[in-house]
Length: 228
Picture 1 (tube, rainbow, N blue to C red):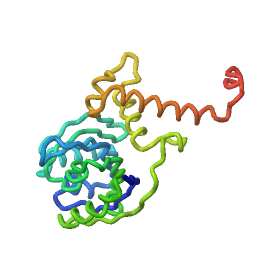
Picture 2 (picture 1 turned 60 degrees about the vertical axis):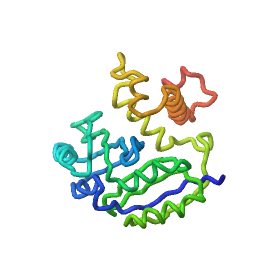
Picture 3 (picture 1 turned 45 degrees about the horizontal axis):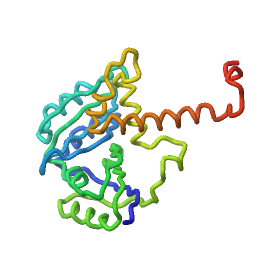
Picture 4 (picture 1 turned 45 degrees about the vertical axis):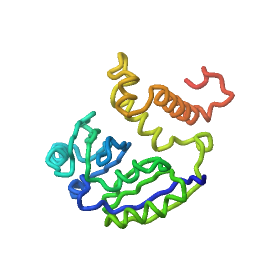
């Protein structure tokens, strides 16, 4: 099997729950994860960054959207204008297709508001890519392939992967690193629909990369000299 990292550029269809948010100024929307819950519905973990004065407007849009079946706030940072939450929807053609293909693994989705499009990155068996594009176009979705690149292992790059960065950020925001912890590892993993072992390993690798980057200039130097 031939797997590659594929980036699609997609124009959100009219029935996307994100569509109504794209007119709010200074908006940044990311889909952090997407899982099917039944044949017709998916749940999406999202992060929205905006001007703090627009947070209430964003929440009102989410609560009133006819394309959202259920909505829950996970965390809200009013000072910095950050909202994390979960939506359940049966109206997202793209998410439903991506999450239902067994040889397609979701990576990240970043909405580019200026271009009114979403850059969706995933890992897929290449023999399925043309079929995915055709099926979405048959559904009226405007989609094209932006790039196809080989898959790199985590050791190939010193930088955090998108998924590592998002898990680490969510863990920090939700208090996993606080003392005492505001959320347990098991609860945090359950929220992500991942095993505690998987989350723990992802956090370990991410933190090691950060430490490697921080201390790369001090290789061979005694720790006491770092503090001078």
